[in-house]
Image 1 (cartoon, rainbow, N blue to C red):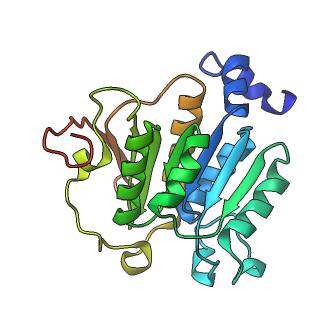
Image 2 (cartoon, rainbow, N blue to C red):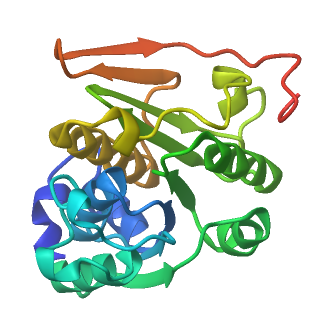
Length: 239
């Protein structure tokens, strides 16, 4: 435990919380700017097992914000390049990779073995699929997203009664929302929100879940705003 001595002295973590982190398994959907930052902190903090899920390969345009990759990784599967970097960062963590776009069946096969899911993908359809499958399995999950100079993060607890789901918060937004390549993204914003996702995850695993609601980050004005979300009686996913 010497590697994690800074955690052991924290009342919020301590030896008991660090052991929970060590015994836990997280599925991370998306190994882009958000996923790279989140994965780096999860593994460096001693997470026992991380499963990285992404179908894409590294492009030169990724290198500014996707911090696990180097120029030599261009053309390589993101999950393979990320796993290699993470193993070098902390060989104590077990890394698994899924090099495909995650469908419902894939989530149903993977999520039961996990203690928590983090969605760091860049599309609404994937987040809705994560929402559906986490609801069915009563699996806690974290939604993290960013675009331009803005970020959003939400810790969802379908394992607790009367908690809102992702669709309760976002309703029927179109599947064709803007993505980072089209709208742009300031590289540090992805790092800040990705690190926040790791904070939410590690805190929750250690026994101190983050506050409910959706948390909005405005990087241009350096402001965080938290909004309470109620369960929607007409929600077609969780009602």
